[in-house]
Length: 136
Ligand code: IDP
Ligand code: MG
Image 1 (cartoon, rainbow, N blue to C red):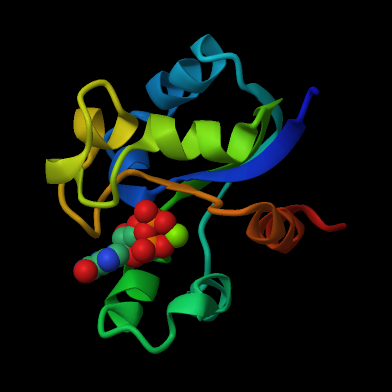
Image 2 (image 1 turned 180 degrees about the vertical axis):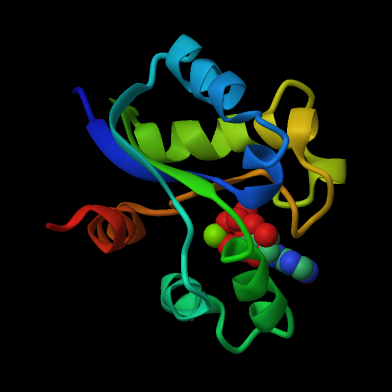
């Protein structure tokens, strides 16, 4: 049975500042993802804190929110069969040093925090994250 899903993808500040957004978008498109909506923006720190609220008890939470709000990001709704899992596979492991060959984080990530891309991890979170950026 077909299972077309939408997921939220973010090209993080470390990648946008190196002008990698066009290249990363073409990887998604070449892998069959449709970019349904996209926008380029810079978050306030308070908005990053809201976006990453699930991580608020983690020791790296403050640095993570500082970082996500430190520069321009590109936010996209990606659509494909099993988009959520498919995007997580294409992104690779959180730590680029542990990411598989050919994944976006292996190709472009600099460190566990500056790992170039975000992707929703479940259908529930995909919906919450898509609404966060694209509702209204
Ligand atoms: P994910 O992005 O692969 O889903 P999460 O565990 O959800 O990974 O963590 C969210 C983000 O927090 C990561 O992408 C990374 O930027 C940052 N992060 C995760 N673990 C660490 C850590 O141990 N130190 C610093 N930053 C981290
Ligand atoms: Mg996550």
